[in-house]
Image (cartoon, rainbow, N blue to C red; front, side, top):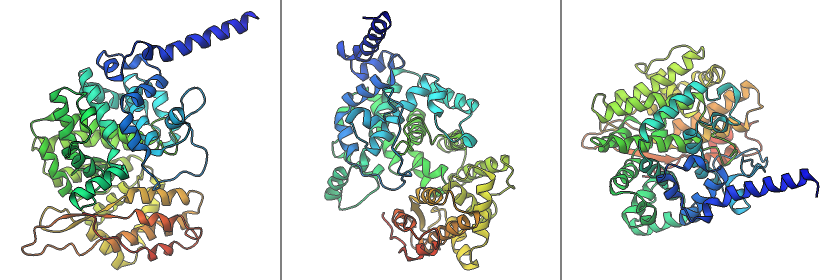
Length: 468
């Protein structure tokens, strides 16, 4: 046999032995993490061990049918095994959206700890790509929070459990018990109360399990990405006060959420943390101390909410857009629209502003009114659940359309929002509530062949009723 072929064969055998060495000595992922050796694993071995450790949770994630945000029909791409395989292609030979998302959450943590900037930012759009400076700030935050290997293990368990509440079997189980149809965070919290997921939770020490469970309870009431996306309302923040006296529970939950966002685009591209782009990461990093000030009672929930919105406005101002103030009702409403639309550049902000200003006066007034209800003073505040995903889908289908057409499409979405907000004025004797209305049904109209030509098709979409 030629010398080159022998060397190639030997190299392949060595690579294979490296991949299976962890299996040979019987080590589990939990033990490897506790020994501080996660960074010694290849991505492929880490993914295999993750699956072996959490097989039952992977079964649940496989059952999730994710249809809200779709790609353009191109084959899904990943970074595993030298064959551009997605995590679920690597593990199962076919794609499962929620598997890809959850595993890339985990890989994002691994890349962050390993200081692998290139792997983390692979295939992010150049204009909004996460800068090395902001990546370092994210990494510094993670290293400050993850003081021990037990903290890392607690975070991994949190990442695995984060989306299992979307499992339709688990949803039906909770629905049969309670007669309600809660969102997936509430499904997870209730399922744990009913005795599910003891095996992964028992991997943790008592104090880390308590921190993870507290994070789950808060997550069932406060969706932090909804805050950074302007999707929820100030009244939604009140549940964060449950974390007073336990800052590490907040820290782990916050880091879990940042990593969940990092992997959120893996159902369309699993080659990196494609959604943790520069403006998104900056928004999370700036919101972190704001929420910590709520926990320590240095800020009211409304002031904290407005600070997060004002930070969004500053990001746009840094891009050359004009200044906006949360003290102005119209500006405040517009900042929420920009947050929901993930507006990260001046040009898109100008399109959103054109659509907003040119709405019929009554529609704009209803929209401004609905977007300024706090849910703190006896009024019913409405959260349009999945509205950021609807904006994302509309922007996807119109990416090659003219600016005039994009403005018309944005106006159709804003009109839907205005129609979905109900009368939210305070009523004597009524304590007020925060109501979620699921607008994901709008996607079916957005994906119709004639939608771009006639965006008023969305007027046929019946505004949803409250889901909780």
